[in-house]
Image 1 (cartoon, rainbow, N blue to C red):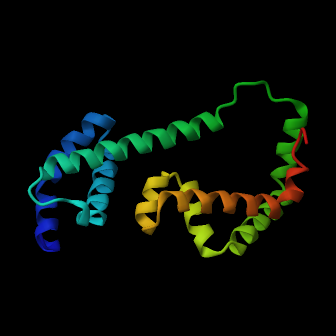
Image 2: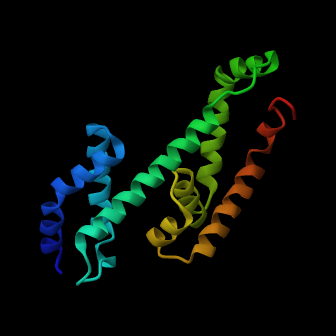
Length: 173
C-alpha cells in the first residue's frame, strides 16, 4: 500500500479512534492527544503493517499500547514526586540551597556531561530518560535491544563519573 492510500485509510478511522480514545481517557482533550499520538505512530510504523490484516484492530492495538505506556510514565512520575515522609530540616536546607545559583551550576554541569557523551550513547539514554521502552528505542534506532541496554548502561556510568562531585554534596552522603 502506498503512503497516500495508507494515510487516506488511516484518516478514515479517525472518528472511531476518537470514540475508542474517549473510552480510555474519559476526557476529550486527552482523547484528542491519544488519537494524535496513535496516528503519528501508525504513520511512523506503517512499514510494519501487513497487508490483509485488520487495519482497525492494528490501530486499536497501537492506541491501547500508547495509552498504557503513557499511564505507566505518569504513574512512575507521580510516585517519584509523592512525598510520604516528613521533610526534615536538612532536606529543607538542601532544597533551599539547591534552588539558588548552585542549582544553576549543577544543571550546567549536567548539560556539559550530556554534551560530552558520544551520539551512540546520548541518543538511547535520552530516549530512555524521556520514557521510551528498550524495545521502542531499538526499533527507532534499528539496533538490537541488547545494544540499547548496553549503551544506556554505559551512558549512566559516564554521567555518574562526570557528576561525582555533586553526589557527595547530597544529604546523607
